[in-house]
Length: 331
Image (cartoon, rainbow, N blue to C red; front, side, top):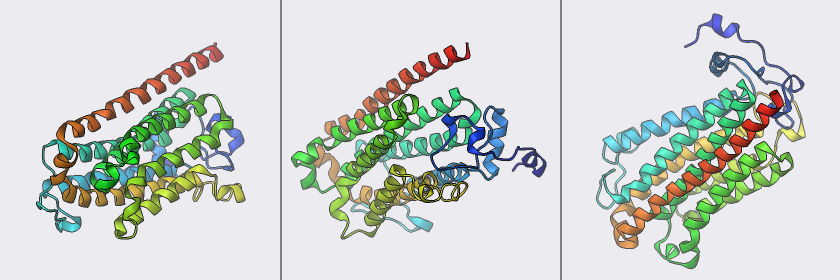
């Protein structure tokens, strides 16, 4: 824990007009940290109240919960909350086989996304280079998480009859394409076109709706699933519109603006989603090789490499363009 003396040495937050336009948010008038400070300044600001505090702490706490819960599930062989077992047809937990790979990929992507999100919101005021690089990394992590989420829901939660339908057969390619498109548009908007800001947020909402579509048929019978879907849709709503701060600019600077609500709801959604996936995994895993075949399962898991490669390549290309532009401006 930081000493009170170090925390008191941090400069107070500033108004929007005191930071460059790149670091401002629409309708957020205060609570900004000064730009261009040492890295230590922003690390210590983890314990300071500013307009990014909740954006940092919500994914950080969610990452700790998700990691500890996965360790409990793995070590206890399907252990539930507080040690109660989540029983499937075989009563087994995680094992080393191809049917467990989508769950492992989901956990890795969730922790990667939560960590990159926390780092981006905590450290981005350091410089323009840091701002672009960290949010590009966050966009890549978000795209990978969306696709791994779609993969896990498709294999563990979807109705087998739906997966064999025409819509089910194109679902994973569509989810991969939308994940890459969402990442690409997010990076492009950050660099070039602020006027595409609304389109980028609507596209993210569309991607979320596509990702949760395999479990829509479970809404009426599973409380875990209905909670997960409601949290997903609410987080997509607050991401796609600047509400409630648009109704009263300056009133929700430190607590309550849409970006914070998005991160809190998404973090809660990931915790609930993880628990639902554990239950569905235990029930669905024995039948997966028979329903899909081991080669299809391996191919589906390997497709994450394409999403990772394409998103990373796009982000690196735009980051190089940003570096060239900033270098030219500094010269």
